[in-house]
Length: 278
Image 1 (cartoon, rainbow, N blue to C red):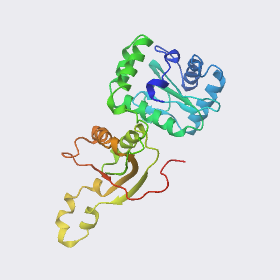
Image 2: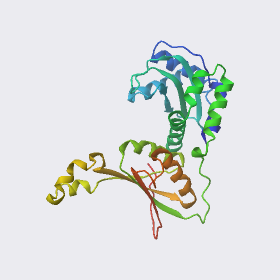
Image 3: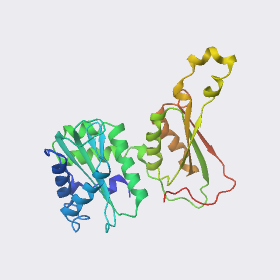
Image 4: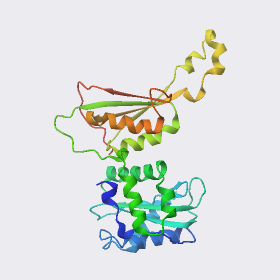
């Protein structure tokens, strides 16, 4: 299920007010019961699962955005809805700013991978498009829903299709030298349905060259931020390679012109097992 399919306009709202986090969660829970998929769950249960999730750590995403989400036993499909609180709500966000745009994701307890994909999709839209600013300006739910549908339909959110039997798998290696790229790249892989990956941490050559007397005069020119790198290893279908690279370059810039990361796709002569997250 993609974001557009999971989004339920019946549960969305704009122009709300709340004095604190608890009141906001209760209003979000009440909105959830407007969805047919949650009508049988009830306001109190929705409020409880959202509150339990907040006790694990705030879902205040920062930049006036919050992404309350929870897994709900008994649900058979995902429901996504949003609510706009123009005045903001104190929500223990990482940047201490009040949250104004809330996206709620509720779904089956056992479908962890799909839950992660929806979180990544919503995060990408709110962090890398003008969707948040547009939502804060609109006065009608219909216009707000159209805003999300438009941004969710962008190519970078393209859903993976069912693998063709003859679609060869490649070993994708993404080595990242700039740490702030990591999370956006991992979100991109989740959007494309990558079900698991291994991340290796390593050191760049400057760490060793700087210890050689011959190169001592260049120590000050070595960029310390590049002394360590992270390499993401994942199995992906060959047909997705180009789209994934384009999505990564949306984070890093043109990889042929900018430093910070390198992407490799290698043929596999043998593979047994899975990288899927348990």
